Length: 135
Image 1 (cartoon, rainbow, N blue to C red):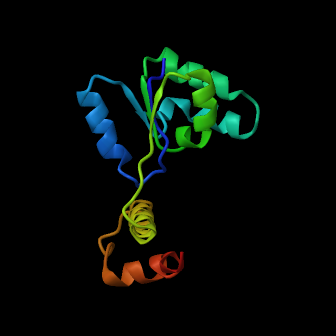
Image 2: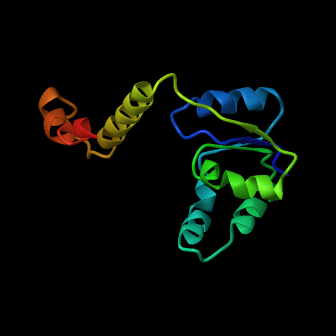
Protein backbone atom coordinates (compact mmCIF):
# COMPACT_ATOMS: atom_id res chain seq x y z
CA UNK A 1 0.00 0.00 0.00
CA UNK A 2 0.86 3.65 0.12
CA UNK A 3 3.56 4.36 2.69
CA UNK A 4 4.58 7.95 1.89
CA UNK A 5 2.35 10.88 0.97
CA UNK A 6 3.86 14.15 -0.22
CA UNK A 7 0.93 16.47 0.28
CA UNK A 8 2.59 19.62 -1.08
CA UNK A 9 1.35 21.24 -4.24
CA UNK A 10 3.08 21.02 -7.57
CA UNK A 11 6.10 23.31 -8.04
CA UNK A 12 7.27 22.75 -4.46
CA UNK A 13 10.09 20.29 -5.07
CA UNK A 14 7.96 17.22 -5.65
CA UNK A 15 9.99 16.06 -8.65
CA UNK A 16 13.21 16.19 -6.62
CA UNK A 17 11.45 14.36 -3.80
CA UNK A 18 10.29 11.75 -6.32
CA UNK A 19 13.89 11.04 -7.29
CA UNK A 20 14.94 10.82 -3.63
CA UNK A 21 12.12 8.37 -2.88
CA UNK A 22 13.25 6.18 -5.78
CA UNK A 23 16.74 6.05 -4.31
CA UNK A 24 15.20 5.00 -0.99
CA UNK A 25 13.38 2.12 -2.69
CA UNK A 26 9.86 3.54 -3.03
CA UNK A 27 7.81 3.45 -6.21
CA UNK A 28 6.52 7.05 -6.52
CA UNK A 29 3.28 8.12 -8.18
CA UNK A 30 4.18 11.68 -9.15
CA UNK A 31 1.35 13.78 -10.54
CA UNK A 32 -0.88 11.47 -12.63
CA UNK A 33 0.01 8.22 -14.36
CA UNK A 34 -1.35 8.89 -17.87
CA UNK A 35 -3.06 5.49 -17.80
CA UNK A 36 -5.28 6.83 -15.01
CA UNK A 37 -6.54 10.07 -16.52
CA UNK A 38 -10.00 8.64 -17.18
CA UNK A 39 -10.30 7.48 -13.58
CA UNK A 40 -9.27 10.87 -12.19
CA UNK A 41 -11.78 12.55 -14.50
CA UNK A 42 -14.47 10.14 -13.29
CA UNK A 43 -13.56 10.98 -9.69
CA UNK A 44 -13.88 14.69 -10.47
CA UNK A 45 -17.39 13.98 -11.80
CA UNK A 46 -18.21 11.95 -8.64
CA UNK A 47 -18.69 8.82 -10.73
CA UNK A 48 -16.18 6.74 -8.76
CA UNK A 49 -14.87 6.82 -5.20
CA UNK A 50 -11.54 8.01 -3.89
CA UNK A 51 -10.98 4.48 -2.60
CA UNK A 52 -11.16 3.11 -6.14
CA UNK A 53 -8.40 5.51 -7.25
CA UNK A 54 -6.26 4.65 -4.23
CA UNK A 55 -6.78 0.94 -4.84
CA UNK A 56 -5.76 1.41 -8.48
CA UNK A 57 -2.57 3.20 -7.45
CA UNK A 58 -1.69 0.69 -4.73
CA UNK A 59 -2.54 -2.33 -6.89
CA UNK A 60 -0.02 -1.11 -9.49
CA UNK A 61 2.67 -1.23 -6.84
CA UNK A 62 3.04 2.48 -6.08
CA UNK A 63 4.20 3.04 -2.51
CA UNK A 64 4.44 6.84 -2.48
CA UNK A 65 2.19 9.55 -3.92
CA UNK A 66 3.20 13.11 -4.70
CA UNK A 67 1.62 16.32 -5.91
CA UNK A 68 -1.85 17.03 -7.25
CA UNK A 69 -4.28 15.40 -7.50
CA UNK A 70 -3.15 13.07 -4.70
CA UNK A 71 -2.29 16.01 -2.48
CA UNK A 72 -5.89 17.17 -2.89
CA UNK A 73 -7.15 13.95 -1.29
CA UNK A 74 -4.53 13.60 1.44
CA UNK A 75 -7.21 13.29 4.14
CA UNK A 76 -8.73 10.31 2.33
CA UNK A 77 -5.27 8.76 2.01
CA UNK A 78 -4.69 9.27 5.74
CA UNK A 79 -8.00 7.54 6.51
CA UNK A 80 -7.13 4.58 4.28
CA UNK A 81 -3.42 4.41 5.18
CA UNK A 82 -3.13 5.75 8.75
CA UNK A 83 0.46 4.48 9.12
CA UNK A 84 1.71 6.36 6.05
CA UNK A 85 4.28 9.09 6.55
CA UNK A 86 3.30 12.55 5.33
CA UNK A 87 5.69 15.13 3.90
CA UNK A 88 4.67 18.73 3.22
CA UNK A 89 6.78 20.41 0.56
CA UNK A 90 6.67 24.20 0.15
CA UNK A 91 8.50 26.94 -1.76
CA UNK A 92 10.72 29.43 0.06
CA UNK A 93 8.24 32.28 -0.39
CA UNK A 94 4.81 32.80 -1.92
CA UNK A 95 6.48 34.94 -4.60
CA UNK A 96 8.81 32.10 -5.61
CA UNK A 97 5.83 29.73 -5.76
CA UNK A 98 3.97 32.17 -7.99
CA UNK A 99 6.98 32.71 -10.27
CA UNK A 100 7.49 28.97 -10.60
CA UNK A 101 3.93 28.54 -11.86
CA UNK A 102 4.28 31.46 -14.26
CA UNK A 103 7.42 29.87 -15.70
CA UNK A 104 5.62 26.54 -16.10
CA UNK A 105 2.63 28.15 -17.82
CA UNK A 106 4.91 30.01 -20.20
CA UNK A 107 6.60 26.73 -21.10
CA UNK A 108 3.25 25.02 -21.60
CA UNK A 109 2.03 27.77 -23.92
CA UNK A 110 5.17 27.51 -26.03
CA UNK A 111 4.98 23.73 -26.32
CA UNK A 112 1.33 23.93 -27.43
CA UNK A 113 2.18 26.10 -30.43
CA UNK A 114 2.32 24.56 -33.89
CA UNK A 115 5.74 24.27 -35.42
CA UNK A 116 6.90 27.32 -37.34
CA UNK A 117 10.30 28.43 -38.54
CA UNK A 118 9.48 31.87 -37.14
CA UNK A 119 8.51 30.59 -33.69
CA UNK A 120 9.71 31.01 -31.06
CA UNK A 121 10.74 34.58 -31.55
CA UNK A 122 10.37 37.66 -29.47
CA UNK A 123 7.34 38.72 -31.51
CA UNK A 124 5.76 35.31 -31.04
CA UNK A 125 5.98 35.63 -27.27
CA UNK A 126 4.23 38.99 -26.91
CA UNK A 127 0.60 37.95 -27.61
CA UNK A 128 1.02 34.62 -25.85
CA UNK A 129 2.19 36.03 -22.55
CA UNK A 130 0.26 39.26 -22.35
CA UNK A 131 -2.38 37.74 -20.06
CA UNK A 132 -0.12 35.25 -18.29
CA UNK A 133 1.95 38.04 -16.81
CA UNK A 134 -1.19 39.28 -15.00
CA UNK A 135 -1.81 36.02 -13.14
